[in-house]
Amino acid sequence: MRRNFSSVIAALAAGACLRFFFVLKYPAGSGDSVLYEQIATNWLKYQVYAMNVGGAITPVDIRVPGYPAFLAVIYWLSGKTGPDARFWVMTAQVVVDLFTCVAAACLAATLLALATGRVYRWRVFLLVLWLTALCPFTANYVAVPLTETVATFFTTLTVLFLCLLLLRLRGSTFWAADNAVDLHFKGEWFAAFAGISAGIGTLFRPETPLLLMTACVVLAWVFSRRGRWSSQWREMIRVFAFMAAGCLFPLMPWVIRNAITLHEAQLLAPKNSNLPGELVPFGFMAWEKTWLFRVREVYLVAWKLNDQPIDMEDIPARAFDTPEEKARVAALLEPYNDEVTLTPEEDAGFAQLARERTARHPLRTYLWLPAARSFILWFSPRIELLPLSGQVFPLAEAWENDPIDQVVTAGFEFLIALYVLFGAWGAVLLWKHSPARVAVTIIVGYIVVRTVFMATLETPEPRYMLVCFPALLAMAAQVFAGESPKEEASSAAAPHINEAC
Image 1 (tube, helix red, strand yellow):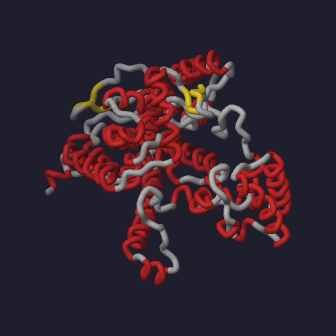
Image 2 (tube, one colour; image 1 turned 90 degrees about the vertical axis):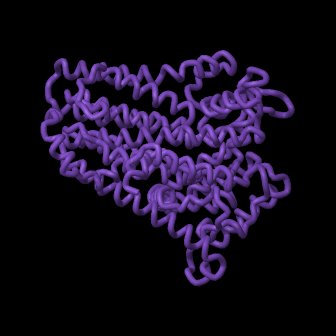
Image 3 (cartoon, helix red, strand yellow; image 1 turned 45 degrees about the horizontal axis):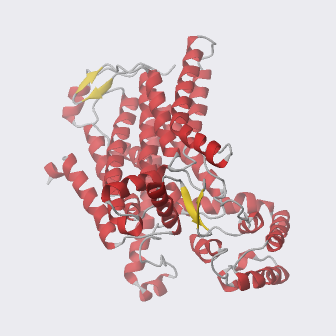
């Protein structure tokens, strides 16, 4: 049994089985899946990055092109498109997610090398490989055509390159097989690799540059503590330049395409994902930001806009401060429900409501609700792709209605709490070793920045935090990264990382 758990092949095989279980048992789709599939199909058939708008193939920039390109390649290889190709898309995502597991394992070993200055890594490598391979949350999302699986891979790869950069900048050696070897790459190349990885990731999730921005702030602070303007500052500028150039390089074809085809300077995608000429419901979204934080309400209200009628009974009581305010919302929704299209006048009415509610309770809009969204982003059971209601409370009623639903939902919530707890514990342990503090600051800083950024959106989707899970598990594994006697003896003579400057 122990031999099985010490096998990389066994870990990857277990991970593949879990992922194919979700693919075969609980395949899913979403509105975004249809959008990506339509763009990919048009791109493959007509060589135009476009959607069908009003019966015409219309070039768009509503989404960055990474995932449509991923789909188009699979369509070309499989000879199928759209829903007919979903099994092959999901199979490809299984492979990508298993590579993410390997990258996370390498990240955990790199963090341990940063902390201890020694080159062993096998125990923590295997532990994280098993943890990520058996993580049900990332595994579940391979069964839906969405960007999360590929974006998670490139985010994890970027963090790995950043940690390797820290090893190089601190003049260390790194491991290969069981022997310590000198690094032959200069630090700038690791910065460029991190930039390229983040740039490709940006083509899948446009907020990926937040990771590089966090890393640059942390590294600038570290360099500034050296206290003198010399070659060290030139080194910092050179590292940042390689990182920025690497990130921009994969994005340039998209920028050029938008400039030529759409006559606009668009580096990423429109903030509100709107089609040309489409009304952006700023007022309605501002009103939602004054009360919405639960995932269930996103389905019942936010995602029904301009597609289905919105029932007043689906809007929670906290959306109304007074009976008069509730009556105003009902008056705005009545004509909307007749046409199922929000007009500029109706949107202006919701904007006025948002201003009034924010003026009455500014902390509610700018502090308490974003804090609640942050909690939901992390501690949601993430069962939206599964045939579960997610009901845990009241305990007796939920148990009577569906005990399996309650147990699975509560178990997933408990598992996420364990991930966060051990991730924080591992970060504290790493922090005790000064060479690892920069890496911990980058990872934790990115998790915080991403959470805060996503909490500003009125529609909190827990899937937005999946990209952080491999790095979180890499830190969590440090809790169990103790040396065996054999490892301690073999690593005693291994070179140590230089002290931080």
